[in-house]
Image (cartoon, rainbow, N blue to C red):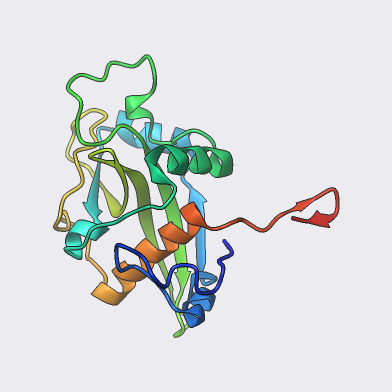
Amino acid sequence: MFGAKPGHNLDREDTYGYEEEKLGWFERFDMRPVDPAAIDERFEDGDVLRTVDLPMSLNRGLVVEPGTGMALYRLTQLFGTPNVDVWAAGSEMGERDVSTWQYLFEVVFSAEDGEDREFLLSIYDHKTDVSVGLSTWDESGDDRVVPAPTESAPPGLELPDEEFREGLVQLTLNVLEEPVPATYEDLWI
């Protein structure tokens, strides 16, 4: 889906580098932003969006090379404004939490055994840095609630093994840091 320069992420400050053979693994993901209307509908039904922060669950930091502002700019270029709009400009924010923007994606991973794994992936700012987490909907009855990401999985969300979680962080870094192949007026750019 998103291209990567072989070897680009081998020497990272945050130890999330990946080898060239990992690039093919990234192509097994289909990552699509969740329709904002579907998110609003879940909020109107009283559902709570809960997220486990992957770097925290791995007990490792995360450093996004372009920085938080550029990462948000890049996500906006690729996907439009954040689709989880609890913190939209002009809305009642109340007490500021650890996040101010969040993108929610439906992800399908085509496993080698032929089984597809479907899950929700969030990219967001966390304490002013960019982070990534696995999300789930909790039908607890609160209104428009997106609590701070946690270190452990919320009820109803089973965490994949450490290698897969690390791969999801690498996939996110690939989305945020690598050029996206595209065509413009029949030219490959």
